[in-house]
Length: 309
Image 1 (cartoon, rainbow, N blue to C red):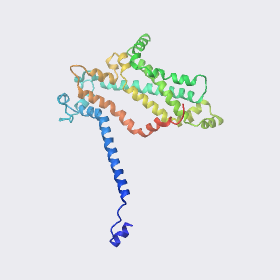
Image 2 (cartoon, helix red, strand yellow):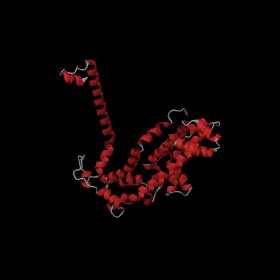
Image 3 (spheres, rainbow, N blue to C red):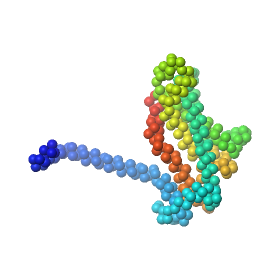
Image 4 (cartoon, one colour):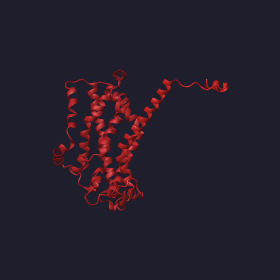
């Protein structure tokens, strides 16, 4: 139509007024949504952006009043000090064993995440597939422990750990973390497994598969996205856990990263740029993992939302 208009020298017909108005409204809505999205993004990410900018400031700039939002003399010396280990980070006091802190955090986060996911998957399968008296009540009671705030359990758990001779050991944290995440893992795994058609398992059983083989070759592969999601949620919660670690761990070389960060803060020598560098280093790996699995992670969060419990 436009080609014909060019060939004949005629001017293209103007858009109808209603259509033009509709386009302007659509454009205005997009602009408003984009601006609101940017504002929300800036508000939500401001603390993290502030942390990142603080990590590259010098000691003088990090204490400047009024605060300097943009570093005037950006430097990576705090990252270098933390990466250099104890000798190079002598001025960071509590963070001089940063390597050990990170390794300790990985140790007490990965193992309980895997264990609680494995136990929760088996328990969730039982609740999803087998009918027994009190199943719904037991599933509900599993979450009762989750309703109590963690600090309310510090005293009984502290004495229990002492009675078992596990004070100042990572073993105590492994047990506590695993026990605390099994209920949530059971609930989530139960929801994921309910979305798998029973007919697939029945067909496998008819073909001669045992219950264990059915679980291993049919259920787990089909529910793998949900299972991985449960494990990631547990790891994210344990990676930054501070309360239980602070009452159990006493030896400095056994500290987790969160304890090292908090102990770095005191009334006289708080090094904001060092804390910023350590926190940034602690958050980047988790951010990278979430970015890589974002699509599957969202699918896993919504996979169990289509069936009644």
